Length: 62
Image (cartoon, rainbow, N blue to C red; front, side):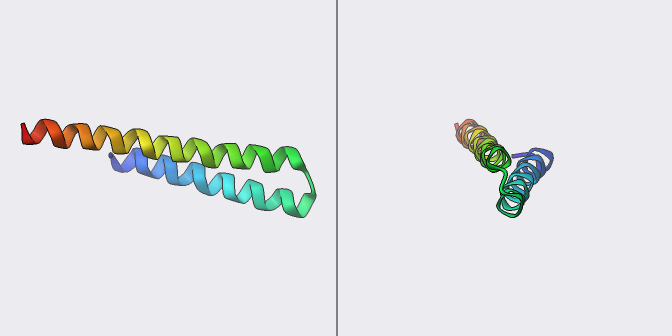
């Protein structure tokens, strides 16, 4: 996984966590859902990059 992709995924996850936490303070359920969605997007970004890394490793060993 490239460093840039990892940083983007981490930033998206942090953004989602902050938005979800702020929704608890403000009582805004829309922000809570949007924060959770951003965290799910970050998890998907990590999964995609992990698959790319595994594929590259398999190719390198072949």
